[in-house]
Image (tube, rainbow, N blue to C red):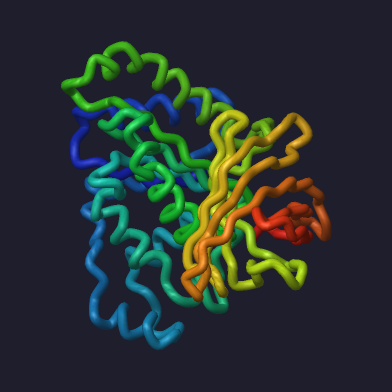
Length: 309
């Protein structure tokens, strides 16, 4: 199997470079092939030209992309998996990696009548100075995942994973105490890149829409639920259709049943709340939750939400 690694860091004197080397060693020890694009050493051009903008903005496949873009696209289509290794700069990847997506994700390759293959796996290894607790508290980690997996990758890989090596800024004690542990983890990720996933069930980062609802309900096909999970605690934000903004919070049990309370404000400015029990089922290859809910005022109903792939 072959991995294409997109590496982006301006300095060799960095923890990120050590993560890259440990990951590559794991790949090599497992007998896998790999190719690396080191964007800074390549001096990859990140600014989209006017010609490139006009081409993509008008959904054209001509003129042909620039030679440096074609080279990156060829590397993608000759690989089984793609891996991005980079530091977090202000809750985003370095500008050079963002520009790589701007140019390489061209019309006719990554979208439209696309020629980009569906990869077996996409893996994001991000190094961050902030501790995970802060990244989660302010929603920064979730934002990074949404941009990279939800937007830039979406359905372009069969499996996407986002890993952050947190608390690694130079002034933090955790940089020293966690250094080797993190490199050991990076090595294992390289070694096991093409292994079958054995991760436990989780709702974290998964998105759903309503496909059925009782007449007395307010969610609709325009309502999007964005779920999160930590341990057996689940929560979600939802909005769309007649709902301006809503929140739910509850628990998930060993059978993956959800038990939560919810509240939202609708387009008429009315605050509504209630409680719900939700049972998972896989139907037509998609995860659905069959919900039985009850408004605080007493009226009951049922609904079904379905995962957006």
